[in-house]
Every structure is written in C-alpha cells, then in structure tokens.
Amino acid sequence: MNQLLVTLGTKLTERWLNLLVLPGALLLGVLAAGTTLGHAHWYDLPRLGEALDDLTARPALDRAGTAAVAVAAVLLLSSALSLAAQFLGSAVESFWLRESRFAFDHRRQRARLRAWERLTRERDAAIRDPATKAAEIRRLDRARDRIGLAPPSRPTWYGDRLQAAGERVEAVYGLDLDAVWPRLWLILAEPAQRQIESARASFTAAARLGAWSLAYLAVAARWWPAVLIAAGCALVARSRAHESTEALASLVEAAVDVHGRDLAVLVGLEQPDVPGPLPVDTGDRLSETFRKAGLFDTDDDAPGT
Image (tube, rainbow, N blue to C red):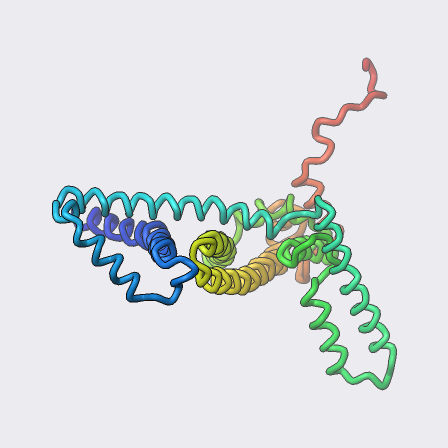
C-alpha cells in the first residue's frame, strides 16, 4: 500500500509540474526578462545577468525562510497562470467551433461557401470533359476538401469538419448523430474509446496552446521578441488543432460505419444474421427512437380534452 501511495504521489507530482508549474514558470521567466530588458535593450543579455546578480545579492534572499516563501510564491503564481490558460483555452476552443452569429462570421462563412461552390463547379465541369485527366479531378477534390467535406455552414474549418461528420452520417445512414452518439459510445470497445478520447484531448491541448500564444502576445507589450514565441505557439496550435479535428471527425464516422448496425441489432431494429451496412430506414427509426420525439405531445382531438 505504501508503495502504491508513493507511486501515485510521484505521478501526481509529475502531472502537476508538467501541466501547471512549468508552462506558467516559463511565462513568468519571459515576463521577468522582458520587463528587465524592455524594447530598447531586448538583445542585452549581459544586462539581464547583472539584474540577476543584483537580485541574488540582496540580504533578504540569504534567509532560508524568505527564499522558501519566494519559491512558494513562484510555484503558486505559475499554477495560477496555467489554470487561467486552461480557462482561456476553453474559450479558444469555443471560438474555433463557433457558429455564425456576427457579421464578420457570416461574411467569412459566405466567402468559404463561395470558394467551395466554385471548386465544385470546376470539378463537375472537369468530370464532364472527357479530355480532363484523373489527376486534375483529384486535385480539385483535394482543394475542395481542404475547405470542407460538405458545404461550409460555419466560419471556421474546425466547426465545419465536425458538422460535416454529422451530415455525412445522416446522408448515408439516416442517423441523427447528436441523438445516436451517446448510445453508440456505450457499445464501443475500450481501444476505440481511447482513440476518440485521445483525439478529443489533443484538440483541447491545441486550444490551450493557443491560449498561451495570447499570453505571450500580451508579454510582447513589454518585450517585442515575445511576439516570436506567440507566433510559434499559434502556428503549432493551429497545426495540432487541424490534425486532431480531422482525426476526431474521422474516428466518429468510422465508429458509426463499423458499429451502427450493432446498435440497431441491440435495440431490436435489425437481425444479427443479416449482412450489409445499416439501412437508411433503420437509421431513421433509430434516430426517432433516441430523440424520443413527441413523448410529451398532447392530442387536442382526444376524447375528454
């Protein structure tokens, strides 16, 4: 039992250091360096060394109690900054997945839709032209898919990709993914659940990295080289968010492809010994069942009403 407690304590400490202390401490270090150097002396590393020497030469730091309080303050402040970054990361995540609510969002969504429709027309014209090579059609397909697998209905690619997963599932199987997914999740094997959870966690981590880029951008007000750090964080966050969104949407669609019929069998809408994909009419019945539509509707024409 003691060994188990020691192991758990070590793992918790490692997670605390990696997720909370280290990212916040790095931001504090950059902020301290930027405040010391400023814009005018942004490159003056000897000046930073002199400031550190002056700080360590102060008599108060010779006392063990003062040094312990200073270390504890740094740890607490680093943890607080990391918690704030996690909260801001949730806001970044919501911003990436937002629907079109404002004028800017509507303009962006319409621009993406016009580009998608233009590439669709070019692709259709290329298919009708016998002289068009297959490579050209594939190029147009990839160009259109980079905008969206379905007509864009949101201002961002991230929201459209997840929205497209639901639209594609409904088009092929007649399933309302919002209603069916919680039930389908219950019958997925643990490895499949872990892969989906990992993709979801990667998207959250990318949004949190985007929040750190905003924090470093704020530090740039005191020390302009922090802009480079902010830009690096933003680029990595964008790349990881793109990869994790694509992985998450593909895994969700794959789960429906592989296990959609199994769910219908468990509910009793399909026979287990009948091969083939999930029929559209069965998907419609599954969706209607899980939506529980009309459960509390009243019939005004019923006798006695």
